[in-house]
Image (tube, rainbow, N blue to C red; front, side):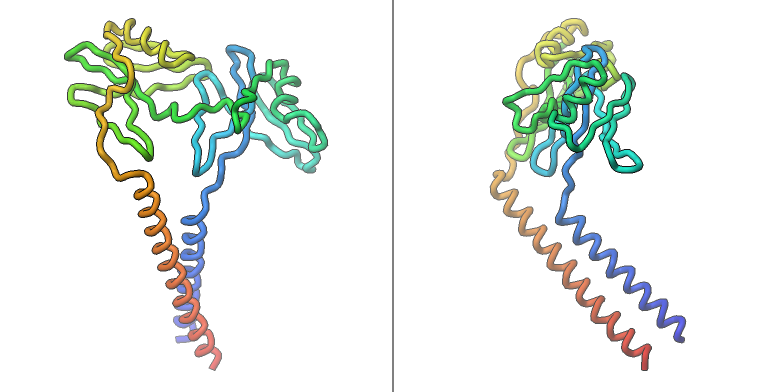
Amino acid sequence: MASHGRSTIQARWIVLVAASALLVSSTTLAPAPVQVAINYKTKQCATYWGGDEYVQLDLPPGWIAYDYQFSNDGDYQFVETRAGTCKLYTNATVDPAESCCSQLGYHYIHDSNNLYNSIGVYGLRFKKIALNDKTRQCGIFWAGDENTSYDLPRGWTAYNYQLSDTETFVETPAGMCTLSEPWTLNLQSCCSRLGYSYVPNNVGVEVKIMPHDQTVMLYNIVSSLIVVIIVAIAIWLAILVKKEITASKK
């Protein structure tokens, strides 16, 4: 019986810890790490940051991002790439990515107008190439964001772009073509090579959705309710565990 009581207490402690972990995970979102990005084809190097819960920045085609790593003694950071390894010390006055680029012999680039000093671009991964085989038309399909939503019209098929180390490409039943910056202008050329006529702007049809402010308000209400429920369960389990511990000592 004592063994059974201990097992019950242990099980409830596990549930309590799990509930606490769920509470933490439901209320926090970690931002992406700052990385060094390299374009081996253009011999360029830059800072890249993927964003957080408020903004999402995608790595442009042809770029590869690498993490900063700490040495065993913690005296410096280093970045390992195909072009070599660079060392970065904490007392350096130069931007870490710029210093790394210089050591690798790559040209450092940055956008002084970019708040995040990152080469990342907004929402690139959500854009697709859409083809209409019946009308022989081709264009961009974008499904929207928190404010707008678009459906792919009947007769259209959307294809994701794919990344290699040096280029972006799209494979379709009509053939394959590569893409580069500026993405939209190059897409027009891609449609032409596939034998389709280019349609400007988004081919998606707008869908009426709940206004953004109402969506945020509803999300906050639901999130608050979830937090309250989790806290209540955690408190209830703590009381039960405390009672069982007290009872087991008698």
